[in-house]
Length: 302
Image 1 (cartoon, rainbow, N blue to C red):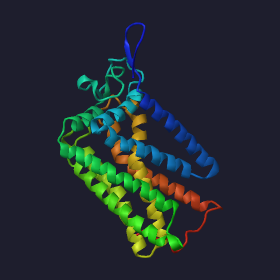
Image 2: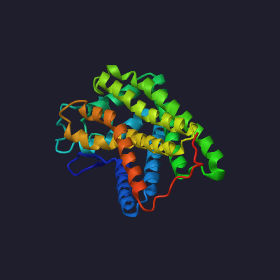
Image 3: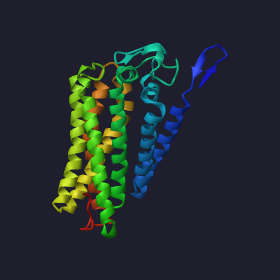
Image 4: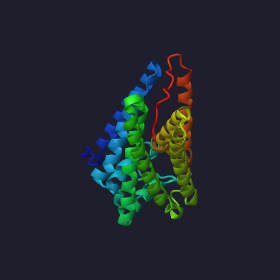
């Protein structure tokens, strides 16, 4: 929404971005609640809900507008300390400033964001369709992995758990396939980091999909304890690839805006492994808790 100040200067306020900031503040409060009560399910559930809202936005708005909204989330942080027209080595402008929801309030954006918007605003339909497919299947896998962890396959739930596990594995397989195909095009995108970005996304896919494979392989061998371990690691990798990737950009974007591609490359290479490490740390912490329940031997995913 655009307002006109007394001096005649138009000011755009991206209320949809401000609403997201409010939701993230609530989410941060739920994280604090999780540490106090040793119950992180409200945090995980609300984070999954925000993920779904963001991903559904790609289908509701269309990829270019959804990407402009995505870039707008970071514009506020990336322009801290800069004059309106002041740039930096990692900042760039886009045609008609169409790559943001902030109107002319922010005219400089991370160069990877400008390239991201241009590739889907002016790229072939096949590229956009692959992005939609990746988002669709990964969203299904993300939701189902939480249902699997929340309702393990004990007793009468074994058949349901096994069926959801198969659907989830199919979804993450399809989502990873489209992610790898999209990543294979990144070698020529200098704003992403070229071949380093392409290899980084391959690495991210390997961490996510490799942990999913290990989760299935261990339960097929009847090793329920190892299956639980790898399922939690897979969940951590998925959270890292989606949420840590984005949270890291909030911090590293402003700090490294004089070094093009560095901020994005750090998120690409580190988010999924860090997510897995954090999940493993929480798993071990929960197992050391005196209230930790032993996993039942009949739990199964695949």
